[in-house]
Image 1 (cartoon, rainbow over the protein chains, first blue to last red):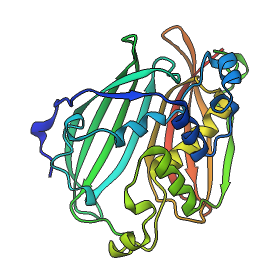
Image 2 (image 1 turned 120 degrees about the vertical axis):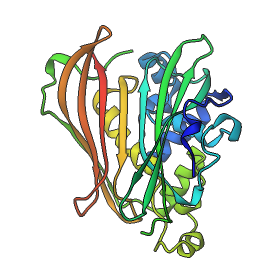
Image 3 (image 1 turned 180 degrees about the horizontal axis):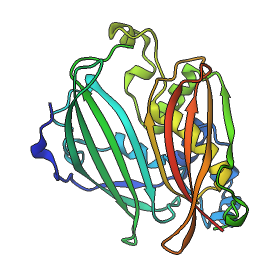
Length: 152
Length: 140
């Protein structure tokens, strides 16, 4: 069980290079055939480069290690549900950019839940800055740890 | 960056054209696992999910959210989305028909940009919401 003393804790910065191969693989996985992800000429004309899909930054979460993902230490991964996800997109993110992400524990809330018993909600916030030092995006995740394993 | 949506021609109540996937598949989940790096076994490992008491694998929430984001960017244009928020409700199972859709609920100006805001949802073939969400997008 995560405890509230982790609130405000910040993780070690992590690097996320924005690569075309991953961008088009991701676009294909979400069934988006928009040529802006697949044709550099179209992308250059329409967006000044190959942009990323709206939810693409989520991929960085799976490359973060324990040091860059604070607050996850006390959680039992078998009892975790992804409750909510939000992206604030502040500036264009294009292939060739190198982003630096910093995650922090924004809040931890405990409450009595329904079918899984007591719930602990972990609100994580990750800020992304590009190689020019511009803040380009903020991702907010709500993870829910249930009191017992959730059955279908 | 050219916006796809013209602020003056959008009305509150306008629908975002639905993007319907006629039956999501296990290979869809595997492809998303590879593309995203989300290798939580609940989404592709039948032995693992049965041991956990779950009948079969189910979609990554962010796979379904990705389908929804495609419906949104087809409407507002890639690069125009300023905020995209989703809440996961019911799970999406292999074979489910998912409809990704939304509607415009507000028009406003923020930080010198003309912004359209709206609600989003993904519903399955039974009419149950898999995702409830909202968005903000910049217009010309």
